[in-house]
Image 1: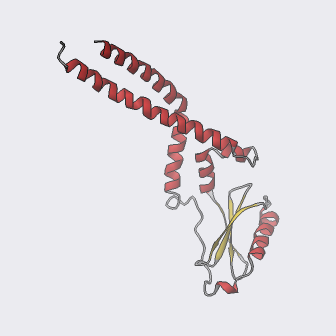
Image 2: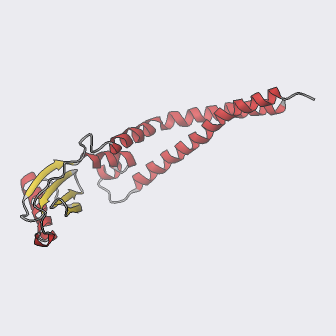
Image 3: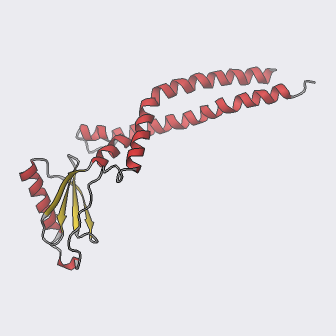
Length: 187
């Protein structure tokens, strides 16, 4: 009988802790879950711009990468009026283009690798969803190059989820354990 009462007491403690942690982390876990679905379906939901295609015969005939970068930065600064600070350049030789993604906003410019012509200017919403998903949106909004918010957010939500797994397991296991104790013949 001592084992049953001890297990029942532990189960009540696990239930209280489980409830407290789950109430605390429910918003964060919902955000992570929803954004994970959006990231998995980003192409189908058109969260990333369609990649343009141009002449792809000989990549040796391309203009230089530096010229594509200058074209993208100039267009962004002069025509769009947004920051021209580049985050990355994604070169697609099979499509004949280079995609330029910027640091201070979620705009993507696609440049023709042969002519240097701007083929597309679109919002890259998948980057926004990704930043919300991993918590780096706070660093982005504070214009910080550190990843402190991302690290803290990811660590706390991950630890909370791991903790919920353990307490949830005991909430499932302990009632079964108590049933086994009750079925054992007393001596």
